[in-house]
Length: 276
Image (tube, rainbow, N blue to C red; front, top):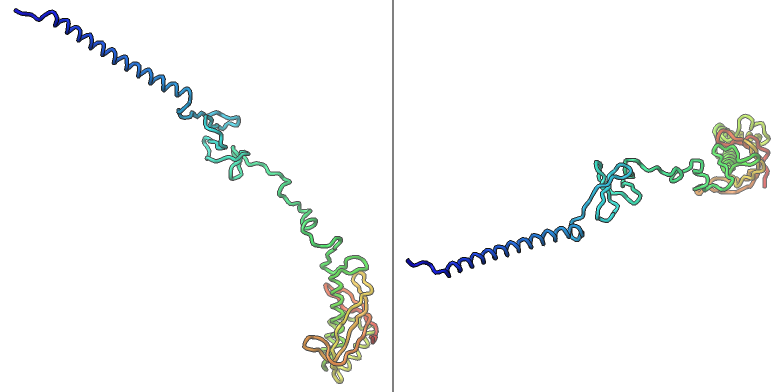
């Protein structure tokens, strides 16, 4: 019987040792790789190089939670259990509210017009010392407001045209026209009323053809509801297309007193006519 040589056992023993050494080497390499991976991941987390930023919620003094973390502050704030919004630098919302639902109080002195100053110091176009006179009461004692001066002149012009500028033969129409411009019946007690009576009689007898226009009214005295002055006027034979006098023209003046009657003025008294 022949057996295996002793050298075969030695070769098998050497092969087993090599396998053990290779296995140990592989385990050692795996251990090194695992250690490197653990150390590398933990180091990055501590240094904050590429790890995602960590956010945490910190309660504020007013009970609202504020988001803090590594991100820079941009004025935006997350408010839990509330509608998301963006605050401005003063902590206000776009709709005018502030955080917490309260509205900021406005300065009472800002943007509120003082009613006592409206139309007086600002935007007023009246001259200094101007006193409005819508009812024609006179600006002051012994003086007429500009509106009343025009009313007095207009009343004198109406009287002159009605009394001395009538053309026709209707005595009643003439008397009615004059009567609408005078204070009845006191006017017919004045000296100038006699001229009206003579003119009315001529209208009824033969008719008249005349025209008259006031040139100017010279105010000599005024006080309260009364104004006096001279009415300067011209007479002619008729009225032209432009409203002026035609034919032979004569100039006169007549002193008269006018009184206020409601919002208008009427002739109360006239002196005799003077030719100029």
